[in-house]
Length: 117
Image (cartoon, rainbow, N blue to C red; front, side, top):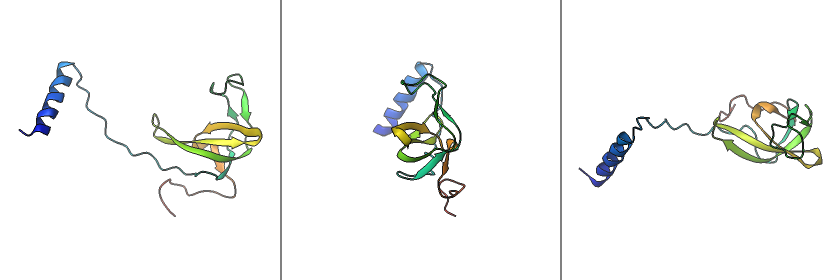
């Protein structure tokens, strides 16, 4: 038995002894973002405070539907395997948004992230 196989067998045995019979989940690559840094977007819906803005009460309107903004940062939400965008709206209001909450300014984007049309 090779050293690598011995280590893997030892780890499997340790997991079995601990009662951990869960199999590792399959890797799912991050979804490609539809928008990029600096791109102009607008709010597709009224954006409400989900509790992440300490200066406003939960449920308060942060940005009304149709307000233009710009992508300031692109990140990834591993819980839902989706891109998340930090968008700067007028007055310096920064809001984290998912793609469904944004529309591009100046026309529609491609329909499927990662697929060129």
